Length: 399
Image (cartoon, rainbow, N blue to C red):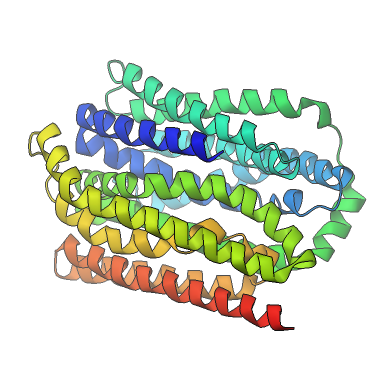
């Protein structure tokens, strides 16, 4: 699984650079807003009940949650689409194209369906399939974005993303087609009562986290323009691609493994957690140093010294990415240890940091101030969150 993830990392980073070169800052800024919207909507549309697939006690329970979510997701997505449409007309009618919102909702639907399928494959321990699917998604995404530039030079990035997600969904449904059936609603009601903290705490926590982590491109587009949003989003893309791919691969395994070890061997759970955090932190630190030195020189050469402020944005945002890398791979501990309330408090903190950052940046008409506040307070917040969870694991080991 790690080999597949590493290969996908390389392809994603190289592809992102050349795709950014041909599309430019404005198109990348619009794409960044698209990703922000689908990331927020996809979290809400599952009500975070997709986590119940992984923590189910047997195949019957797991597939029941899977089938229930296949019906729930489109219903909630259409409801959210109506609310978002009305919200965008009132607040962002001059900034957000309605076509962009429509495409974002299609993307959210595809992303949510894929997430549910991935959780079912995680429960079945089909990690090789998950790893290979990430490679396929990365290659197909970049390939379609290249091809579509000549026909849709502003929305080609979005359309390429949608096509690759749709193809991945077809693959997942082919793999999981044998379990698709009518869900047992009585069992679902029992499961919701049993895992009531997921809807009560994890959902608002995850929704707040999604908004906090994805709101900034929308705010930058609104207050500073599409080009600045493009540079910001591309900086996060380059810095965060390895973190995203490592976290998405490791977290699938860690979620399943930590659920078992919590009941069987708490000491091993603590050791495993420390090991994953240490390895990921070392890898990300080395990568960030490389990107901010030789990497930036190479990128400036490739972009012919366009994409202004790319070097400074990347350097500042490295603080945030490094802090985030300490916790993201083990974030499933929130569910495993039933710490949804603590997660909610932390994500409210992140949301407030975003608002404060954009306020002072807009007040002084300097986006660098916004990024500095976001990176420093966000990065420190993630490190403190990691310290809290490690301390809690140490406590339960002694019990």
